[in-house]
Length: 183
Image (cartoon, rainbow, N blue to C red):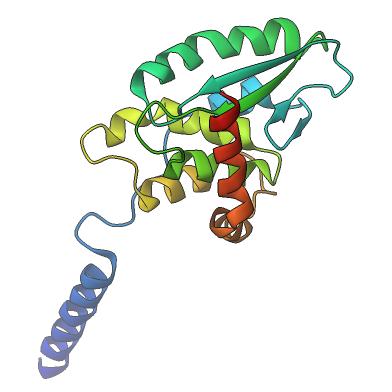
């Protein structure tokens, strides 16, 4: 009987330790849309902010703010058609340009998406943010949300540690500011 009581006490202590270390809700789940993004952009050449063949006869620059819900509606309604109709066929190449509509020339999300572009997945990363903006409407974009987006980028080759280093690189923020100035 004493061994049973000691076992129950030990199990309760272990459960308490796990609960404290993980928190009541546990780790935050990845964001939704990874499969949608993979279907849309999979198999299309990407380099930095560019999507499509470098030899395409037309380049279309899309200026958008990945933290703006109205901008998300535009992007999610317009870009998939462009990708399927002109990019996938090699008739055009798209460039994603960050143009914040708020007061600051750079945003956390823009820098994070640009950093993802260092690994050739800026379009996927930005699209995942836009698909999930409803999750941060009241709290705003946080590092935790951006990390959840990073963990949802399709493909085993996306290196989250490299992405975090690229986010901290002053050159990444400079590219975002350059987009804003160009806009």
